[in-house]
Image (cartoon, rainbow over all chains, first blue to last red; front, side):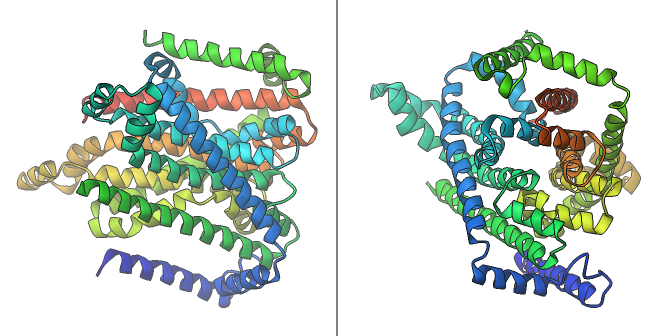
Length: 249
Length: 244
């Protein structure tokens, strides 16, 4: 049997088992509603358009966080690569960065940025940007010296060398950073919405939880899980295709 | 040389903090010196220590569960090639979902209090530990495995003499990542569904707009996380030395 077939069977089996446990009352309905009821409720909510503004808010914030992390991350990565001393001094920071509980800064960000969308975007950005920096550095380190020599022969300036030789050559690694930035931005923004905010999908889930509204809550949880998994899996597949194409050259 | 760079970095961070403080003023920040003093006062307060103990206990249990379950999932998946191939994308998907969304489910299952926090810390830590353990076991040099078979090593001897030493460096990397994520999970758990612990204090300080308290707690948590990570990183690099 093929691995992906086995995987589908496994996932479908797990969902069916959950459905059965909920339907037979082994898992009481106030703890979890059956997956089919979640899907039904989600369908109704999406059709009614009730949460469309929240979905738009969350997706916009995630999008801003990803874009900012990409631009800033690639820029910082490129600058750091050309300055080994700075990079050496900052290295412990890079190694410790993801060990720091980023949400601990959220109260501070609220104090600084106020109660708008900015603190959520900032958390998403802070989580995502380091992945981009690290992968950009990793990619730039692997640019073959012969290409840089060719750039020098053609008398390209530092900016042109970066844009026309270094970054295109490092592109697959930068893409890995991009993929992680997408995942981390979702995690950061939705987590922050959960802690405190006045709109967004995360906010609606915690609001529904506080009102014991299991129908809405599970529908929105299902929505986020499906959305994030679809986005990440598509990026994963795209990355595989890019890498395969590069190997052929 | 080796110890001067990190020192320089710490000085640099405090410098940036001080400059930032001078820019935004008392509305949103406190100076590093004032924060250190506040933290000192907080640590001297006998009402504060039970909260630290609560978080430490929840985190220790969550991390221990993550470690045991992560290894129990990861090691067999690394040994069984097909099962690993089936499970890997599922693990990656689980890693990349915002696990905060599952928090209401955890609360509904465990109720508010210690078990929910422990469970939340554990689910954050399990996946990275399992993923690294799986890769560690999968990448054990096949020549070593075949040599062990030729020498007719018993399963026990094989585990202790070949598998464990070969997989250890990657497993330690996984433990380092899992440690950080389990800490984040525990704190997040305390932020929503708890009346005690550092996460709860942070949440309370936020709603009271108590900047001194927010900064002192953040400093404490960051210093703890960074300190433990530095130790694990040193161990990690020591174990990886000489490996390709």
